[in-house]
Amino acid sequence: MAIISDDEGLEKRVKRNPIVKSETIEYDNLFENSIRPKDFDSYIGQTALKETLKIILEAAKRRGKPLDHMLFYGPPGLGKTTIAGVIATQMGVEIKITSAPSLERPRDIIGILMSLKGGEILFIDEIHRLNKVAEEILYPAMEDFTLDMTTGKSQTAKTLRVPLPKFTLIGATTKAGELSSPLRDRFGMIHRLEFYSVDELAQVVMRTAGILDISITEEGAKAIAKRSRGTPRIANRLVKRVSDFAIVKYDGKIDETVANESLDILKIDEFGLDNTDRALLSLIIDKYDGGPVGIETIAAALSEDVRTIEDVCEPYLLQAGLLQRTPRGRKVSPEGFRHLGRIIPSMQTSLF
Picture 1: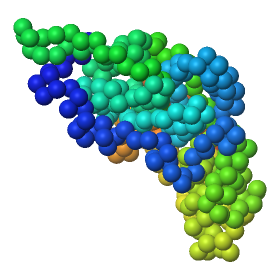
Picture 2: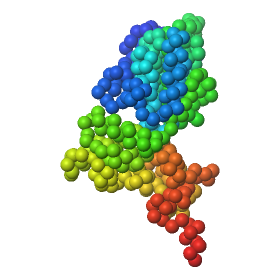
Picture 3: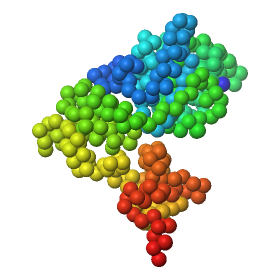
Picture 4: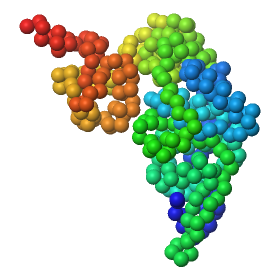
C-alpha cells in the first residue's frame, strides 16, 4: 500500500507534476511523420505474435472489454514500443508512454494512473527498472483497477481506495528475469520478441527507404539487412547512413555494391559486428586466451559499462554463436575465432 502525504491535496499535485507532464505523451504526437508502422499490415516480422494479437484484439472488441495486461521482452530494437502503438491503433484507443526510470516518486505513477481514461493503454518501457514503491502501487491498479493509499500522518492517517478506469498496461523489458514474480504474474500475456531474419529485415529496409524517398534495389536492401544484427532499429539506422554515402560518393542509388562499400567504410562487417564487438572478441582472445573471463573484467578492459555489454553487445554475439556464456565467464566460440581470422586454440596446439 502506498503511503502518500496529503498536505496539499492529491489532485493539485498530480496536475502540476512536471515529470508526468513531460514523460507521458500521446502516441500520435510522439511518432508523427515517423517510420513506425501503425497497423499489422505494415508491421513486418514477429508473425506468431501478430497472429496471436489479432485474435486477442478481436475477442476484446467482441466482449466490449479492455485487453489483458501484456508484457513484451527481448533485446532492444525489435519493436516492443512499436507493437504497443499498433495495438492502440487497432483498438482505437489512446496510448500513454513512459519509462520506468522516470517514475521515481509515488506521485509520478499515481499521476499517470489517475489521468487514464477507460480502455486506454499505459506503456511502460524498461519496466524491470521500476522501484519497489511504484511496483506496489501497480499491483491493485492492475488487478482491481484501484489505488490503495494512506493519506495524512499519525492520528489523522486515513486509508483510501480510489477507483480507476479499466485500462491495459503494456510493459516492455530487455530483462524479463529481473521482474519480480508478483508483477510478472499479473500480466495476462507474456511474449518474447525474436530477432528478424535477413528476408524480413530486407522488407523493413525497403519500406523505410520508400518512406524516406531513398532509391534502393532489392540486392542493396538485402546487403544492408545482412549486416543489421537481426534488428529493425539497426536496419533503419543503416539505410539512412548508406543513403548519405550514396548521395555524396555515388549516384544516389543504393545497390549491393554501394551498400557493401559504404558499410565497410563504417566498419560494419558481414556479420553486422562493429568496432566494439570485434574489440570485445579480440580482447578475450588476445588477453585471456579465448576465455572464460568475467563480464566485469571485460567491461573494465574495454572502458565500457557492464550494462552496455550485456544489453547491446552480448545478445547478438550469443545469438550468432560467436560468444559463449559459461559459469566461469564469457568465452569466444570456435566460430568467433574463425570470424576474426584467428587460429582456434585446439588447432594451434595440434600443430606442434
